[in-house]
Length: 245
Image (cartoon, rainbow, N blue to C red; front, side, top):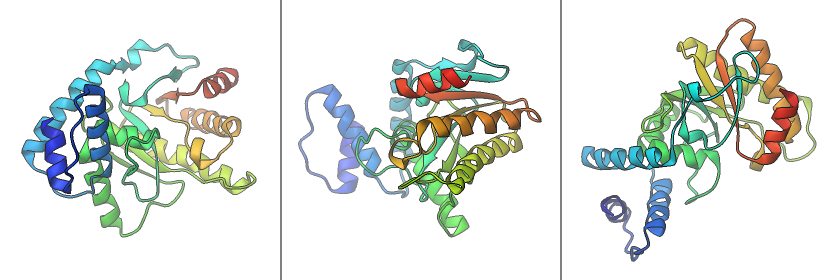
């Protein structure tokens, strides 16, 4: 309630706060989603961080040691990527890197920014302002995970497939995986969880995307034995990765 009131006051909202706790949590998430990247008080961060750490604890955290490899250094796990305690999780970001501003949207970008906290949008905004342009497709950036169980977040912008899949789409998607893995190796990370980059609203066919993911990761691991978790959410993606692995 304190966080809701603070965000409503900051943003000039005068809506009635619902009595239902689930609706209050939805409202809080929506208010966090639409908050622009701007300075925030230490008091707000202290309360927000305590709230998010408890919310994640209630969801349940999965560690790498809880999983069994399906191949050497390769794991397949179905679930909420914001509940994974690994060195880094991968966010399928947009070119602005600022997260999803649509309140309570079900995309992974929204979920990661929600449970990391408002600090993540501030960190991404600093990256974009420093480099002076939006993030190109196929590249990656790293930020702390803040309140997430993961230590870091690797943000990558996947290709958008609006028509027929072509070679450039495939090369750019492979570049997303390569860029994340190279960034992880550069920072000495030992485990990375990949979401299904560019599938969903970005339109990349799921089977072809999974093939590129597995092939690119496997090739990289020949020189760098980093642990990789292929994280899926949908049953269709689970079946595809099970067949490939």
